[in-house]
Amino acid sequence: MAENHTKTAELPQWVNIIVYIALIAILAVFGDLFTLIIGALGVTIAFVAYFNGVRSEEQHH
Image (cartoon, rainbow, N blue to C red):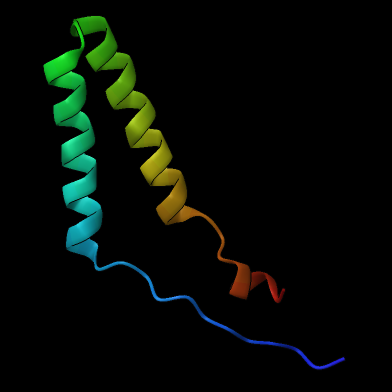
């Protein structure tokens, strides 16, 4: 079977930073202090896991 090596275009780094800051700002505006702290931790962990995760092309899928 032939392997299909398609690569999706990644977003520029500045777009990811803007999205991260926007999510933290939304938490700060619409949440209380507890929601801000827990939400900021959750968003940060999600972004770190995304950027440190193993990509599918590295797994030879």
